[in-house]
Image (cartoon, rainbow, N blue to C red; front, side, top):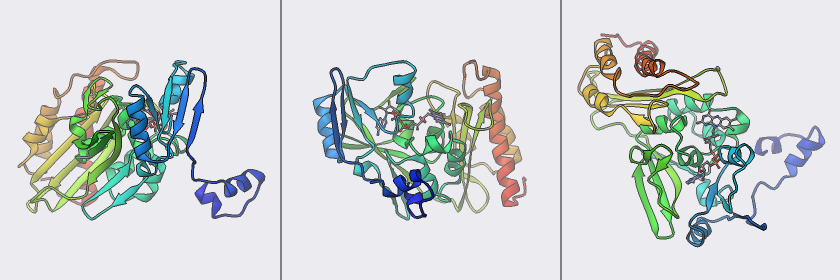
Length: 322
Ligand SMILES: Cc1cc2nc3c(=O)[nH]c(=O)nc-3n(C[C@H](O)[C@H](O)[C@H](O)COP(=O)(O)OP(=O)(O)OC[C@H]3O[C@@H](n4cnc5c(N)ncnc54)[C@H](O)[C@@H]3O)c2cc1C
C-alpha cells in the first residue's frame, strides 16, 4: 500500500489503497467464547500476557491461520502483535541489525538487502510475496517448526533473540532457543521482541563467505525438504576462523553441525578440507523419512549442500580451490 500510495490511482481499488490509513489503531473484540486484543504498545502486550498467561500470540497469522481454517482450533484469547510499535522497528548499527519480531518479511527483504546474502537468498525462496507481506520473523521462530526456513539462516549468523515478559527482558542466542520438537525456551507470558544479527566477523577473520539453500519438491512456494545455511569466516591465510553449518529438516529442531564446525576451525578453506568435512557430515544428523523425502536423501543433502556452497563461493570469489 505504501508503494501504491506514491503512484496515481488507476482504479477504485488503488484509490482505496492510496487513502488507506496504514497505522492500525488499538482494537478489542469480545465474543462469546473468544477475546481478541490488538494493542499498539509492548507494555500493553505484557500486561495482557500477565492477565491471560495462556493467551495465544498472533502476528501475520500465516501459520496460525491454518489452525483456524484447517484444524478449526479455537483460541479463547488472541493477542495480535501486528500494531505493536516496538515490534515493528528495523534498526541498523555498524555492529548489528535488529529486526522487530513483527516486521513483515517483505519489509526486511527490501530494507536489508545486501547486508546478509544468505538471508536475501532464503527470503527470495520463502513462500510467495503475498505471504511474505504478512509473515514475520517472530512467527517463523515462534512456531518452532523443524522445517522453518529462517532458523537455519539465523543460526548460521549467530543471531540473538530479545525476549520480554511483564517481569523484564532477557537475551538468548538462537542456538539455545529451540528445545525439542515445537518446543522453545519461551516461558509463559514471554514473547520474542526482536532478533539481532551481528555484522562483525569473528576475531582474526578478514572476510566471510555465506549462503543459504532450500531444497523442496517444487521450485517455488514449497515447504523445504532440507534448508541449509552456511557462514565461514576466513583469515588472511584463508584459514577458517569460525564455521557455522546450520540445517532445517534434519532433526526435531533447526540445528547446527557443531562437531563439524569445530573440526573445520583452523583448517584451510580448500577442497581437501571440504572433502574431509563431507565425511564428518555424513553422520551428523539422523533425519526422518516423510512424504517429502527419505532419511537417506536428507543425509545426502546435508553433505552435498555444503560442497555446493564451497564450489559456488570459490567460483564466485575466484578463489583457487587448493
Ligand atoms: C502459503 C504458505 C507458504 C509458506 N511458505 C513458507 C516457507 O517457504 N518457509 C517457511 O519457513 N514458512 C512458510 N510458511 C509458514 C509461515 O508463513 C511462516 O512460518 C511465517 O514466518 C509465520 O509468521 P507469522 O507472522 O504469520 O506467524 P503467526 O502465524 O502469526 O504465528 C506463528 C506462531 O508463532 C507465534 N508467534 C508469533 N509472533 C511471536 C512472537 N513475537 N513471540 C513469540 N511467539 C510468536 C504464534 O503464537 C504462533 O504460535 C508458509 C505459510 C503459508 C500459508
